[in-house]
Image 1 (cartoon, rainbow, N blue to C red):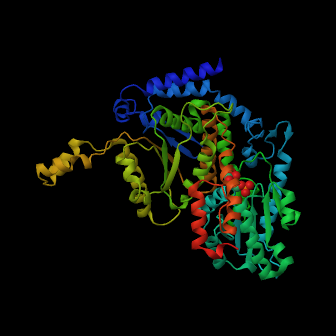
Image 2 (cartoon, protein in one colour):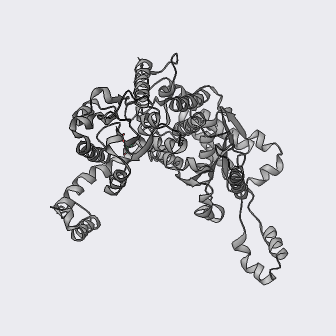
Length: 550
Ligand code: F6P
C-alpha cells in the first residue's frame, strides 16, 4: 500500500517532468516577480535560494507529496531516535549526538549515549587545552608546533576541509593531513615537519585501513628514530573505535579518543576524528563548529517539510536527477577557504548515494546519486565551466557565496561575488540568437561572419542552479552548511529507498589489492588469477621496476 502511494507520487512527478517545457526556468521568473522570495528559505545563517530551477508551484507540490509518500518525516524521526537506519550494518546513524549539548536526548536503540559522548568530548577538550597551555609537552619539554593527522576518507576529508576553511595565522598549531599510501606524499610531509615538535594523530575508525596503518607505521618509525621508542609514544594519539588495535599499535589508552560504530566515516568530523581541528583551530572554534551543526540538526528535526532546507535541497536534487535526467552536479564555492569542500562532498554524497539496490535488496528502477564535482570559483570559470554553459547535458550547480570577507580587500571580494552571481545568472538566462546577433552587429561584424559564429556564441540558458548564501565563513556557519549537506543526503536516502549510511562498494578493490601487492612483490602474476589485462600490467610493472620485487 505504502509502496503504491510512493510509486504514485513518483508517477505524478514524472508526469510533470515529461511535459513540454518542463526544464524551462526563465518563464517562471517572467510570470512571477516574487519568485526569489517564494522559492528561497532561511535556516540559521543559511539562505537557500532555489528559485533558479525549473521548480514551479506544481512541481514543488509534487516533490513535497513525494517526500510525504516516502515517509521522509518518519525516516527523520527514526534517525533522531537512534533506530538502526543503517539496516545493512544494523546500526543507528547518530552523528547529530556528537554536536548535542547536555540535556539533549540521544539514544542508540535504548542506550543513552549522551554521557559517553560528552565524556569523550571533555577528554578532547582537556587534551587540547593541555597541549595549548604547555601542560602536555614533547619528551624534551618543548611545545608542540605541528599536528599531523594520518587518516583517509572520512578520517581525513572532513577535518582537512574544515582546517583549510578556518585555519589562520593566529591559530594555535599548524595542521597537516596525510592520506594517500603514496611514498611521495609521506616524503613531502616529512620534509615539512620536525619530528621533535610534531604530534601525530592516527585517525581511523576501524584501525585496519591499509593506507592509514602503512602511513602510521612509517610515522612511528620516523618518530622513534628522532626521539626514541618511549619518546615516540608521547608524540602520538589515536582516534578510533578499535581500542584493541590502538593498544597493539603502541598507543597508551589515555592517548586514545574513541567513538562508536554509529558514527559513519563521512559523518565523523564532529567526533574524536575532529581532534586535529580542536588542536589546530582551538577548542572554542571546534565547539562553535559543533554548535553550528546543532542549529541545522534542530532545524532539520523540527521544521515542517516545505520550510526544511535539507528536505528542499534533496527534493531539488531528485527533480534534477530523476525528473530531468541530469546525472551530475557541480559545487562552486566562491571562497578559496572552501577549496576542499567539493572533495568532502564527493565522499559524503557519492559514498552515501552511489547505490544500485534499495534497502530491501531489490534493484532500483530509477537513478540514484549523481556525480558530484567542484572547484572554488572563480578558478572553475577558467576550467570546466564551458561545459556547464554549452555542453549537451545540463549540470545543476550549487553556488556557495559568502557575503562578508575576512580580509581587507573589498574590491577583490566584490569581484569574487560578482562573478558568482554572474555565472548563476548566465546559466539561467543564457544568451539567445537575437542578443548575440545584435552584439556582433554593434561591434561591426559582417553578416556572413555573424551567421558563421552564431551557433557557437549562443548560450541556451535554463541551466538550473541553487545558491547558498552565508553572511560570513566561520566555524559556526560552516558547521551549519556541512550539516545541511549531511541531512540532505539522509533525505535522499529516504526518497530513493536506499541506505545512505553503508558503503559496500569500497570493499572489492580492497580485497583484491592484498594479493596483487604480494604478486608485485613476487614480480609476477599468479597463474590464472587475473584477467589478461591485469596480469599483463603486473608483469610489465615488474619488468620496468625490478627493485620493486624480491
Ligand atoms: O574505504 C572507504 C572507507 O571505509 C570510508 O568509508 C572511511 O571513511 C574510510 O574508508 C576510512 O576508514 P577508517 O576510518 O576506518 O580508516
